[in-house]
Each structure stands twice: as C-alpha cells, then as structure tokens.
Image 1 (tube, rainbow, N blue to C red):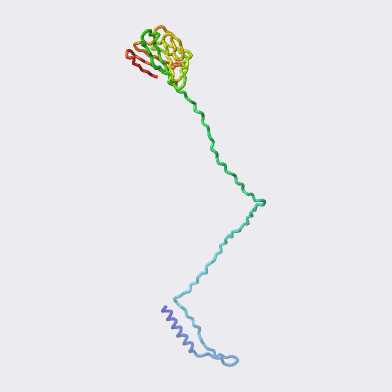
Image 2: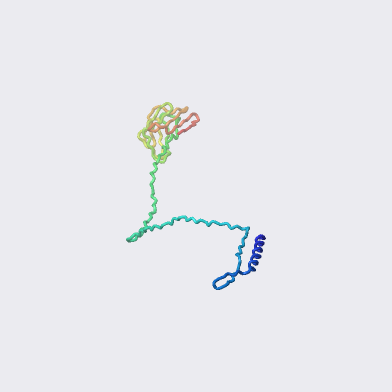
Length: 223
C-alpha cells in the first residue's frame, strides 16, 4: 500500500510538470493554432497483476421431462346395483341325544341264611337249609344246586323266589310250596361236626358259601 502511494505521488508530480509545458503552435490554413501539449498519464500498481479468471463453462445436462400419459377411466354405465344385505343365520344348538345307558343288573342277592344241621329227633326229616332273597326283585332258582362238602347236591326244580322272601330246603321228603322244597332223602346230609354248603346258579357260578363247625355252631359265610 505504501509503494502504491509513492507511485501515485510521482505521477502527480509529472502531471503538474506537463501542465506547465508551453503550448505548441500548429500552422493551419486559417493561420497559427495553439495546441496544448500533454502526455497521457498511466498509473499502474506494480504489486497487482491482474489474473484472467476463466469464465465457468456451463454444461447443460439434458433432463428428461416425464410425459403424462392420459389414462382412460372407464365409467360403468347402466343402473347402479344396490348391495343386498344377506341375513346372518344364528346357529341353533342341536340337542344330541346320548345313547340310553344300558342298565346293568346287579348279581342276585341270594344267600344261605341258616342251616339247621342238628335239629334232634329224625335228623333226615328235620334238618334244612334256609335260603333268602335279599334283592329288589324275584330270582329264578331253576336248575340251581345246593351241595355239601362231600359232593351231595340238591337240584332246584322250576322255582322263583320273590324279593324279601325265603325258602327252606328240607333234607327229607314232604309237600312243596312257595316256602318249602324237599330233597327227598332218608339219611342226613349236613354233618354235625361241621360242613360247608355251596350254592351255585344254573351256570355253575358260585353264589354263596356257608361254613359251620360244631359243637359251637360257629359259622363263616363268603360270597
């Protein structure tokens, strides 16, 4: 900046010197013309060298402009259909009948209730076995058997014992009815010292067992 000022001062001094120079007379057709003499003043800043700045080159990039394609919208013609509401059916519970349970009959409650094995007197005529029906219905005793421990067996005739009833099976002969049946023997069957009576149904299935022992007449029953 200081050198620029110095150059400027020198330039101004030179300018003043030129202004003081005498005028030059030029001869023209009309006579003498006074022409001022001056030199052009060129001031330069020796420190600054202008640098040509290249102009930016503008490169045009072609940009594709999207072209809108007209889309044809098909408008349906004709009467407008009104949606029909379909009623929703509520499922109805269906009662499913289960199979009728099969009633299982309980085994008949027929048992040997008592044995009079030592009645006194004519034992063959007086001894008996009392059989009871403790069930809720009648039970057919046809072809059932009553046996002692020696294998002597009495086979029931066609006979039905009602619920809550009992029947006596006598060892000796006699008249039969709904409460009395007779084996028809002339000798005793049931041992006075002790014996076992077994009652079986027509299928030979054991229904009841009666065990006794003398002289206390203790008994033991199993079903």
